[in-house]
Length: 153
Image 1 (cartoon, rainbow, N blue to C red):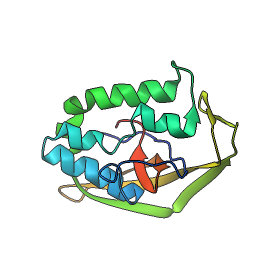
Image 2: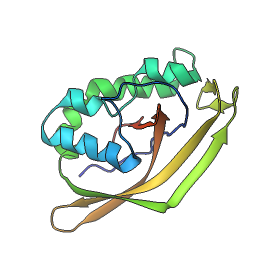
Image 3: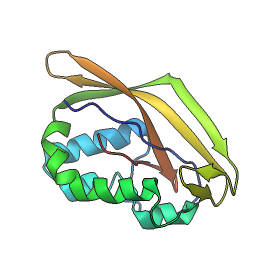
């Protein structure tokens, strides 16, 4: 099983497609795992924001690392699917939640927030067949009430 890498979560009221993202951080990760099991890279990509969705809430230069990561991960998901599909269960340890707030104009990565945002980091526990568990601190972006991953694992 691949170790999961941190991801960014921003809270905002920006609109997104109802078919994208998930209702919670663990549901976003679970959605990627389910898509991986089905070898459906397009469905897996729907749990990651598009650069256009990020542009609704962030003012970023074209070469911003956050935008670059989103473009690269969406393009490379098909290669990652076999490892992602090995996860047997997902659990969120909400007592590990860390929230950082941003106001309009504050720096977020190399970007500037267009409105009030909050960054949430939470620990997600992943189980593999045979009872082995791994966990990682992850970050998510929340757009229009839906959670999205912003880095690959």
